Image (tube, rainbow, N blue to C red; front, top):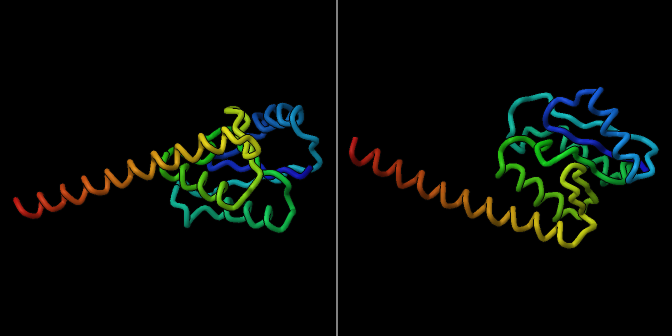
Length: 141
């Protein structure tokens, strides 16, 4: 099986070897392709490593997308939820090793959809609060 390993943060080779040995217990590994970002910006339009990962999956170069943990997607919870949304809507096979979350498990997909809904509603509420704050600032300054 060809595995695409993605991390927004830097991938440390020593940790990767331990991670690969854990991963090999669950999957019959043939090749591992590493995908990482060369930026500290978390915006989705600047996630070129992630885009390449999805392209390679669609081209059947890799069979499954693996993440060490959810933090591998970055620190912004809303951005993470948008990545979950992309993965679920694109029917990608993926696995988060430390959290034991898998796209093949129905309850894991439901859990990720709950996170997506929560983060989107939180962002909507925060955007409204920001607009109200801007309005009050402009009105009273």
